[in-house]
Image 1 (cartoon, rainbow, N blue to C red):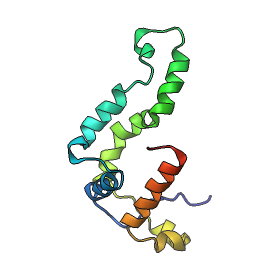
Image 2: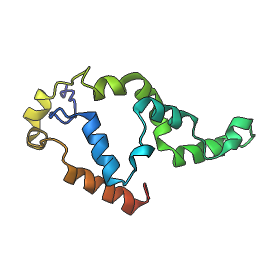
Image 3: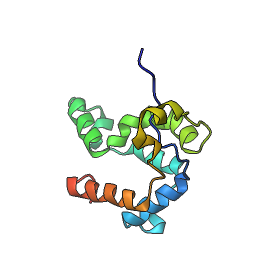
Image 4: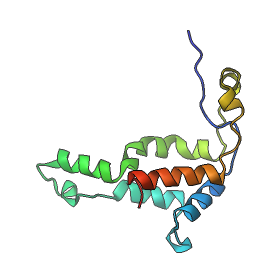
Length: 130
């Protein structure tokens, strides 16, 4: 059987540092920033098509519209169940086997502000964020 690999950046980084850098790159004012718990609540309650909550007979169309407008809704089970444990270092995935098989993973280094800027540039180019 082929090995099962954990594909995670082997360089531990502060989640707060990553989100701070992304907030700056996205131009979010400090007063618009919210913590994870509040953000997750907003993800769960956001509806692009309010008819969904009214029992509309076209619920599947509204559900698709909501998922398109709010793709994070698909991740709610992961976000509620595992994300914080992984993001805060409570669970650390062993990447030694993966690093042994991938020189890219072995040499990747921490996520830099420059790499985050490339992500934001791509997201803007594709219309994912304004």
